[in-house]
Structures are given as C-alpha cells and as structure tokens.
Length: 460
Image (cartoon, rainbow, N blue to C red; front, side, top):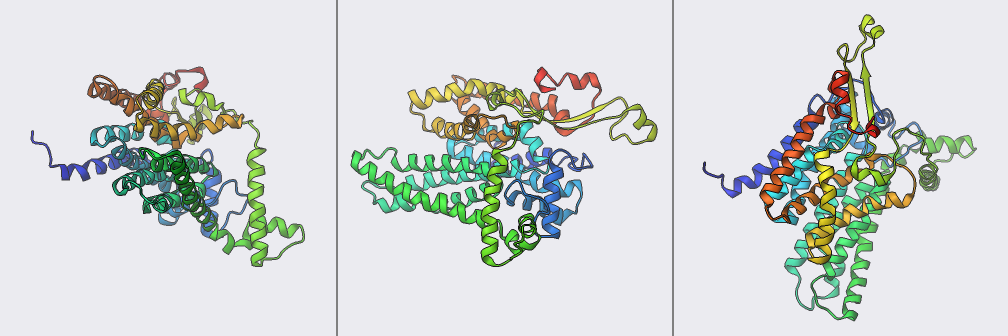
C-alpha cells in the first residue's frame, strides 16, 4: 500500500489525534445529568459570571477557568453538556499540544503521535476533561507554555551566532513572550500554575547558556541578561494577564463577595481605590484559605503515592436501590452501579515508573538534552507538593500527564528495539483504556464487574 505524501501526514496525523481525543471526551458528555463532585462549585460560579459578572460566594480560585466553563454555558445553555464542553475542549487540545511538543522534542511523527495517544487514553486526563473543574484547563495552558518555550529554543538556536550580543539573550524570540502569556493564563486558572513559571524559566536559561563555550565571566553576564529578560517576559507578562483576568470582578465589584463583606464592616465604598484595596485583600484571603485548608476529605492523599496511583478520587457514584426501583427514580439500570474514578491508566503510569530512572541516567550520563527537558516539568510540577508536607488530591497531577507520556516515549526510544517497545507501550495503554473505561466514563456495571476494576484496596 502506497504511503500518503508527507505533506498530507503533516496535517492528517494531528487532526486524527484531535478527533480521537474529542471523541472520547465528548462521548455522552451530558451524563451524569446532574452536577457532581466539584461541579457544584465551579459550574455554579460560572453561571454567576453570566448573570452577575462575579461569583456570589467566596471564590477559591482565580476566574479564568470558570470563564471557560461559562463560555460553554453561554453557547449551549445551563445543561450538563453546556457546563462541561469548555473543559472537554481544553482536554482535547492538550492531546494535540502533546503531539506538537513531541515533534519538537523527538523530531519524528511516530513517537510524538504515540505520546499523544497515551494522553488521549489516560484515565486521569479523560475524567478531568469530562467534568466542570479547572485542572484540565490548567493543564492546557501549562503545556502551551512548555511548547512555546520549545519553539523559542529552536528559534534561538537557528539565529544564534558566535559572540552574540547579550541583548538577544535578554529579549529572546516572540515565542518566549507568548509563553509568558500562556503562563499568565495558567496562573489565572489556578495558583498552582506558578509551578510552571519555574520550569519555563529553567528551560529558557538552559537554552541560552548551553553549547556556547563561553568564559565564566561571559556566561555569568549572559545568565544575568537572561534572568533580566525572564523577569519581563515570564513574570511581568503573566502578572499583567493575571490581573486582567479579574476585569469582570472589578467591573462588577458591588456584586462581589468581597464588597459585601466590606459593606458589612461599614465600608461600602466603590471607588477605584476601594476596589484595588479590596482586590489585594481578597488575594491575601485566598492564600489564607488554601494554607488553612484541612486534610479531612476521604480522598485526599500523600503526593508520594501519586506516581504509582495509590489513591485515586471517586467523583461520582450511583446505584439502583429497591426503593428507587419501585419509585422509578433509578439513574442506572437495576442491579448495576455506576462510578467515575479519577484514576490514571495503569498501562501508562506503571511502565512510566521504569522510565524515570532511564531518563535520569540518560540526562546525567549521556547528556541527553531531550531527557533533561522532560525531567524538568516532571520534577517541578510534582515535587513542590511533597515539600508542602500535607495531603492533596490525585487530580493535582493532571498537568503532569503529558510529561509522563513524553517520558515513557523517550525511554522507549532508548531501548534496543524501540518499535517493539513502542508497540508494547501502545498495547498496554489501549488495553488499560478498554478495561477501565467504564469507571472513567460512568458506564453502569454489575457489582462483580465493577469490583474487578478496583485492583488495590486503596482504590475503593
């Protein structure tokens, strides 16, 4: 059979990957037909944005991710499909960006496509994309910043010359500034987007300093120039985007929770100064809220166990009791149970545990720049949760999923028979998806069939 021309593949492959991701994420997206888990916060806040311009209650996160949810509600109505479609779109685009990032790292379509398929079929990526929460939106912007930094790296390497002025390192390419925009969108979705600022900064510094053979004095001056430019492109630009994301809050300040609290304290002013002062105080209150958040939820878990899927998060449970059956109120067929569990695909996550030491060895012993580039986001998006020294939720790992897939693919490339290893990785991922899809998509099963999906006691 004749192969399609390379130009056709250049467009057909990413479109096919996007179609695969969208098909999984959009399938029966309106089910469950009610708000479930944290949708009762984020979908409600998004609806408030459309009617009041601001949340009625106290916000727990910045506004951008909720505006993404609100856009779906505006287009498709206050229905389950409407409040989930924005997040599903973000999750689908993340698969596409995984492919584009893989192309920049691996320089070949096949390994890049494999990484994208692994993300498309991952349970954590799927479940977080089918619920009106913020993590899939955050993952999209984090990966966008990573991809843009890879574009910046390639652009700088093409134009870099011996003895290049420090000004070029200070300014970078236009992609570096676009990466700053993506970082701002990430932080404006959830504050954990700040972790991506560190990883992007390290990658930019590595790009500008590697392979130059400069004297220590010159390298130090270049590092200072890069740092100064990064303050502008990767700190000030994100800060400006973050503040701009509160435009609706400033415009509708009298309706906000902060204004109501201030008015109860006897200060009902709405001047520009009042709004700025109240906004600054609300940011402090957000810090206090998250610092003081107690680990009382039954599905909170130690970040140490996240890489090996120790404790997933049950977000939806439905069954049909005898009384419900008699009243005709069952959401699922009699004698079945439906569950949605935020659980990664064991066919990806467990083989990746073997890939991490391979990447570390290659980065250190072989000076493998691709392995090192993948390790940076893997470490900086997970390790800070360990340093926090308190339980969290497994779904905090949603932005890490694309880098887990890229890590496994890089380890596959390091084997003696990469095509065979890649086929095995793909087969494990497909098998995992086929087996666990019911507990990712909420498909009703008998009790015995459902119990087969809970391999570890900690998954129950």
